[in-house]
Length: 80
Image (tube, rainbow, N blue to C red; front, side, top):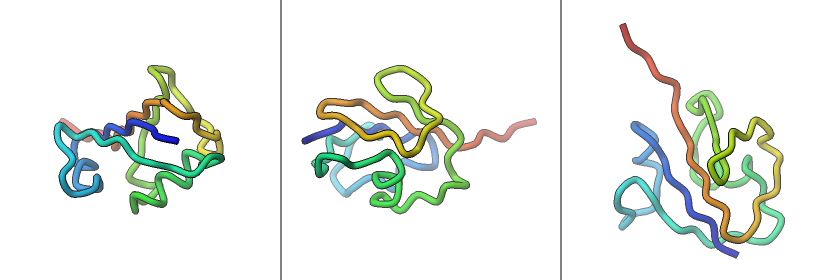
């Protein structure tokens, strides 16, 4: 199965080489969860503020992904 992953801001460096626009289409084993994908990309949990799947906020990191899902992962934002 394949999912589209878009990493925002500082997380973009975690995408595989050759990815453009902060996005990649990744092959995954059926049954892969959001947490497993995050681990595969070597993103520490503390560096993730928000995950959306197919445009909907997804707080459950154990949610199993489906073929064709689109994830967007946002880091915490700081400002002043």
